[in-house]
Length: 352
Image (cartoon, rainbow, N blue to C red; front, side):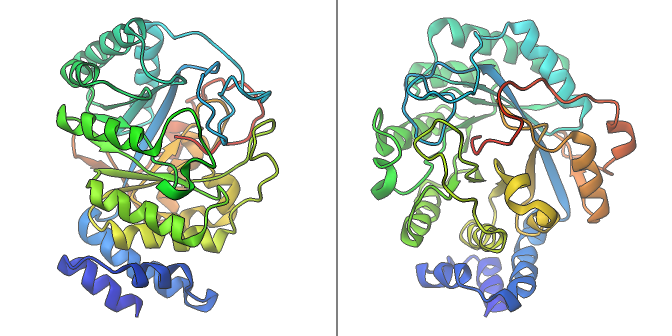
């Protein structure tokens, strides 16, 4: 069955909702067969390439939104930390470190409802300087956009805009009340209309039903997004979801396979919660997914650049750079790159 699903995905025939549901129910004894089928699809479109992405917490904490999974919301007594907007020099320095780590993409993120004019000035100036200095793709994740703000970001050199749907439309108001699921859809559409690539995914483990997860996957297909980051909830102390259990590793891998079959050509990224959810099985995520975050997740740490280069090398994959060039992973050279300083508990957060 899994080989037949791969054949359909490779032929350009969209898989059905029943097929996607069957992937989530794959028996444990068939997990390796399922991963192999997903890898056939991944390999056809992405070869053995893995792209590294680095997050930069450009403005941390004090966010007025009430996303129930996020330690940066001002609504909750979560020890996520708070810091003002970084300077242009700080953001450029972060991009240099990401480039040294052989990351394909550098993503500047602000904890806010949407970018103020001052914040936008900083992001756009940083983008122009980074693009003028180094060959790295730029992503921004700044909250809700207007048409004018989206166009300005695109003109400054931002290649991609991230704005996750997080979960299904039906489940969304159980997680967030300060904006709607449709608000997020509208921002993705504005980013696309401005000429930026769109990065839009969600979080597995928010208390959603199986149908909610399938709704998310197919809504993203309808939006025709360019990149799908799949996060796994690592519930933050002080948030409404504190105490939620981790996603079971086998289910996490089946979810990644399901997203790969639904999105055969898409940049599929295993994102927040990778380390703590998959643990010793992290390398297996590279069979359905073709990209990962390295150096942590905004407020807390994750795998180091050295560790991720080592994993990629050991699994027989190679790195894809912004230039399109592929190079071997090089853990020895990465040992000297210090991870960025993170505030708050030293566990990965499920946000990208």
